[in-house]
Length: 284
Length: 320
Image 1 (cartoon, rainbow over the protein chains, first blue to last red):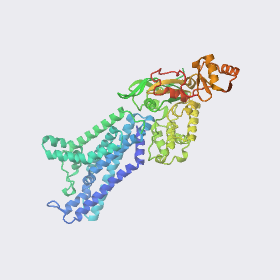
Image 2 (image 1 turned 30 degrees about the vertical axis):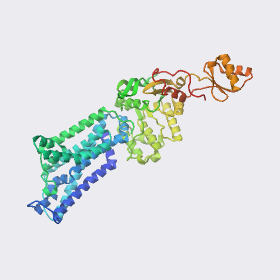
Image 3 (image 1 turned 90 degrees about the vertical axis):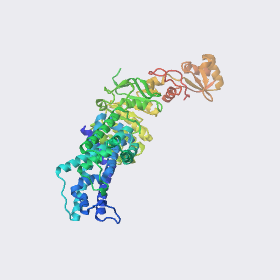
Image 4 (image 1 turned 180 degrees about the vertical axis):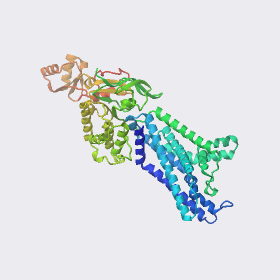
């Protein structure tokens, strides 16, 4: 098992796409922070703020006290998409290159290869989360210094909860990518379907379901992955409305955590079953 | 019978209701031999090899590979394989690819350099595989199969894409492996190579084993006698009068083909010379493996015939 994990980590570390995805995540975060800070500090002419807008209070969202919440909001669903891509590329590419057969011929069982991939991905996702929160904390510290303002850092327990929440959310989207890749036995279609679902279908579904209203449709809406991931983020406070991150918490935090965990378990169970039972392509 | 390294019993694979890739295959590979696994494209060779490696699940039947069920880690630990196109991580160098597979298979890292040297890739070891030619990938595939220094090698078209020098090197490697006591199963369309290295061959067609045996058994008896004589029509008449009209046939300008077993070459020569016919050539017609292969795998060939044993019957190919 340890061999399989080491090999997978070696491959992920050497693969340019891992670094590109991590780089995009950080770039998104930095861009988001700078835009928000600039927007609040120097509002464009004609900008419409909510009634009772308080600049000093609004700036608190880019200071250390809010670095967990703002970090997640800034990255948003694109962070989930990047993790989905990570999951697809780490597994689906093996089908495209035909390397699964070469891996399995070396002797490890399918379970070992599958588990090795999952553990390695979990480690990379944790690094992504730590990187994201670390950069979020860093830039918030720079901004609060630059503005000569003060802001209290979240306590250790909250930071640890933030790391856990990030790991869960990013892990779930990575599992979604793994699920699509093993099910479709390729990367290209998995990426297409994953991106369309994550960035378009969920938004349309939510708009439809909440638009129609009623207990049944609202209940279905509360089962959607994105609704639950945003509800997990909302545990760390609701962002100011002008951020576009005024998350409408539709699900209780604990229930959201459980729902996201169940999604992850289902994705991995289906992916694992597909990988264990189906034939491996012999060609490319 | 010597120990069997691979044995399949009624092994079958059905992909769908109308695609039966492998049909009741009974294959026997003896320890220490080079076994040529032949068949036209789509005959079921790769599917069979995939089943032996545990990559493809059989629909029915069973197999034992190196004393274990196909795909069992204990069995895989004793074998190395190259199936279909060699597959590697394009963003890693050739050496790093082998390091990945060596680590996963628990092979010592010193085997990586040794394998690279064996296939002549030491100079390109640090280049990304994405920049390799097809021949280099093929060599790397063979190197990957050698990493575990296995007792059994399963090589699917190891010479595919190689230049003539590479083909010779692979042939020498196979012979070297046999000298070391290893068992090699390999498929190839280069029948000349197969004739040069294989101890035994199995021929599959449309999923069924249509022949299995030593090369001599597979090629069968001589295909008759080729006679070049002048005048040819007189020679044909003389042979027909003495041994029967069905024993002789024209085989080209000035050439006659006398059916195998119909008449000894010496008797033909004596009869023709005595009648004043000039005989300029008289030689047995040896069927090549290619002749037999084409015969066995012809669209109207004998897949429904006996599943094992050397083929029989007169040759249908042109005389050589």
